[in-house]
Length: 63
Image (cartoon, rainbow, N blue to C red; front, side, top):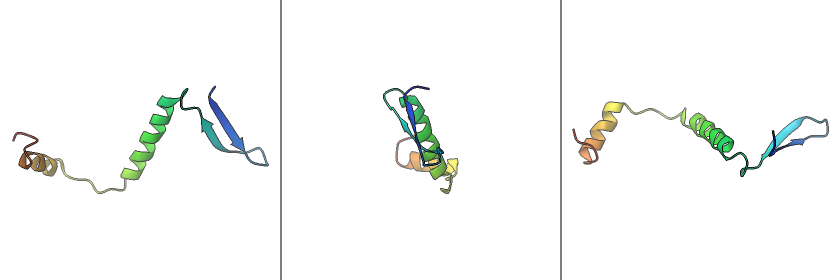
């Protein structure tokens, strides 16, 4: 796969990757989405009914 270079340690083990974002912008966006999703997985959820009520109260949604 072009546009990706690997950094290796003294033992030849891959330790990092350098991704050419001009070539693989979509790949980076996918990686970023996964990272954001994992970070948010620990957040407490809000019930849909509560979100809808807040939107109606603020005038952003008709009830």
